[in-house]
Image (cartoon, rainbow, N blue to C red):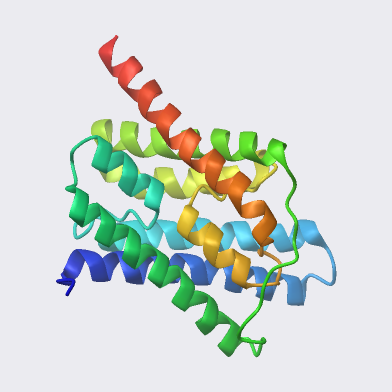
Length: 218
């Protein structure tokens, strides 16, 4: 039986609300934008950046406010998190993300169970997610080390920018990526596109750690 502590609950709650805002604001924006995708994306972007700031401020002193399996992976590799703890973090992140999809669909009056038909492209999306994830991870690592009080604002601002300068809209999060396959709404991603996104996220996180270590050694 898995022993649950406040860190695991924080990761579940944080990933739940992060995913809820990503998907829910996408639905709301699409409902109100009268078919203008730029307006929908802007609404989705602002809401996501805002909730990231709030969630990181709320939970960073409890769990580290990862809400993202690749962030957890990086801190596992850096030996700042034990293997079993990292696995539990990832479990609760995915659980929180998946519970969020059901909840958002319910309160927006959507069909509860959906599979996305939104194909988000091929190999170019791998590259886009590599860039997005490198940016996210180096933001976290450098700001955490040199300006720890600014992590929440830095991460929120990077993801806000990432929505607009990457063709993939900067998913950079395997748990949220998988959850988005279960919503056929504005922010959905077809299952056929998931491999590209997660491949890019894993490669990007590894390259970010190499880059961080290289800069720190010089």
